[in-house]
Length: 381
Image 1 (cartoon, rainbow, N blue to C red):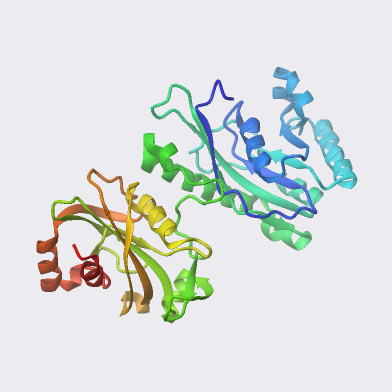
Image 2 (cartoon, rainbow, N blue to C red; image 1 turned 180 degrees about the horizontal axis):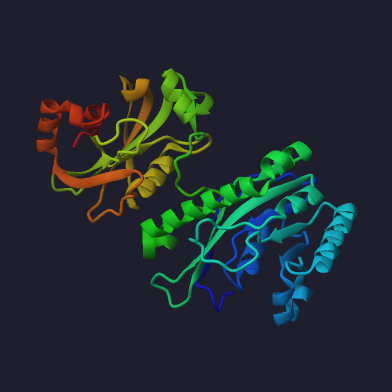
């Protein structure tokens, strides 16, 4: 792998996985390296457990050495081989719960962007046989970009805990698992398309997640002194008007201009309005500066040094009945260059003279976000 791949990039690793049951990885199937890169995922989750990779008998006959490395014939075209595989896993399950299995439900090699991804029937049988089991979807893609050898990019989805037959029928079906893996593949494709050659540079830490519009994302609820009192889903906090922690970033070129963005028309509030370079919310347990750095990369594709310059509280009635009630931590940095914005977040960007901007915000306030005037006032540029 070190000779043939420029790197193995993994993100989305779960913080915890139940240790009283086996793990079942489900992944799309692209080629020779898939089992090896999934082993790298397993090393981060349950490194000492045996790993069994399911394969077709045809491929095992081509690469007989793989059987010695833990590959099992699932008998796509042989009922006898399938029954033998099922007996093997049933015996393994009775002997120990400390093992990991890899299943490629497509049953064939397909491009990562083929839709539908085309799961074959039978995955539910494996889930039921291994239950109770933790199912972990993993999206895989390989890209050359500007390297002489391809890099492997793996996006790990949220673990799906299966405790019994009711869970098998609701979250262990072919349709549900195909939908979950498709969402991970789409997220991975969007990230790679957005960053291109810079994808390794902006790749998140292994325990972080790729940028996505997650309605269940949690924000930090605070009191008037910015002391944490709890957490809540982002959308719920904006519906209720709960006071929560936020970050805003404003970049300047050092020559009197600031970098502005116009929010995507798909944003859940303030769509299409001009605002500061980026903004967002720290996640529970995430420091404010780390959140500001993360959002600068997620929204604008920029890595730049930033400094905390102010903290302020504001409340504003927004569209769709939402309320922005935030303790906002403002960061300012100096940077010059051309951003690479995420189209899901940003519709346009431009450098604007700060004096002209202040005049236009006063004359045309409806073209700008509710928090921008406070940001400009506190930035002291």
